[in-house]
Image (tube, rainbow, N blue to C red; front, top):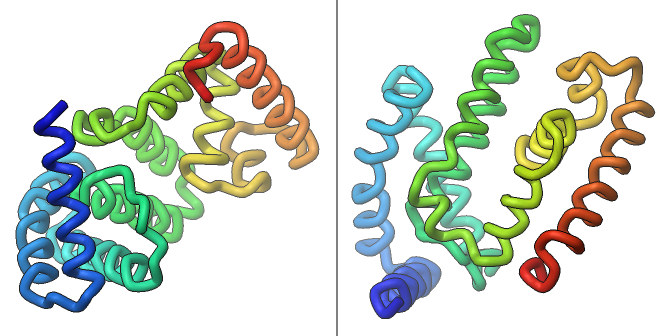
Length: 196
């Protein structure tokens, strides 16, 4: 626990230094995580290096802009995890743009993404987040998929309608309400007190 607190304090100090315009720390953080991201991206998503460099740079810019804007004052994960998460979302958006007609490829990427909660992400989740994750995993497969597509991947109801082959967006909306009620009920009964 002491090591975790020390790490959190070091990360917070790095963020403050970057926010205050320390270019040396900014550059060090950029270089520190770049190789790991490139290796991870090539291994996990079979992307070419050039595309990954662009995504990494964009993710790092998002980190910097959010820091300067004060949006990350209470960041509860490491710089690395934040960059990887932003980059992963950017890869998904890019992949969706490039494969609008090929839904089978898109489905495969989402399956990879769902399996892609790496150990580092697991370690930085708060107890409340871990309990919520367990509650979601206790839901049925349809609800898990719908909630993941809507909240984690940020898909709109129209995209979910097509992906999950529902009749219309109203069906998606109704199913989402049922799933959220089921999640709330499950959270209250099974994880009472753990999700507060």
